[in-house]
Image (tube, rainbow, N blue to C red; front, side, top):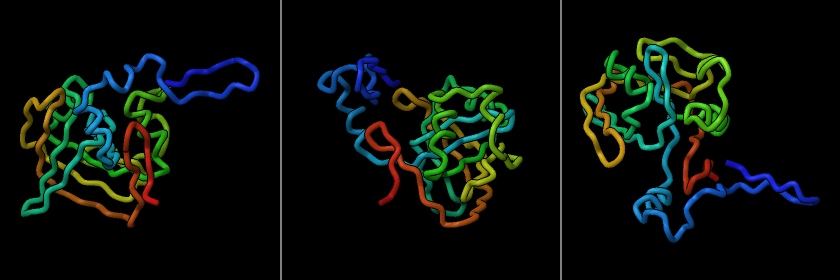
Length: 176
């Protein structure tokens, strides 16, 4: 949220005027904010999608994926129904896309109305993504205020060695 001051010479302030003061915020949330996390887009047939910054990939045979999602999201309803989803690591050019799927940026016509999308059996993926993973849902359980999703990675498509978009202390960051 942005606060606009209309006084002469005033600037736009990139703070939330309704946010709790730093000393009143949860220490666990503040710790989580200090951990840089990859920004990913999870999509499912339907289509449905959600920006997720708590995604972990575990190597093995088969490869596994874990993530925390909102149990009340349209994405979760689609994943539960279909049993599959796609995970796309986002890059610096995807900031607006990440905000749109996080519900922070308007999406007239729907989340998938703009941009180029590749149709996959796991859900649509951005056409300009550096890669994506097709996942089969293995299970879920409540974990903190989210839902811990466990999946098997069934397919990996890598187009190039794209730079990641990171989330750190409430802002997007790039590798320097």
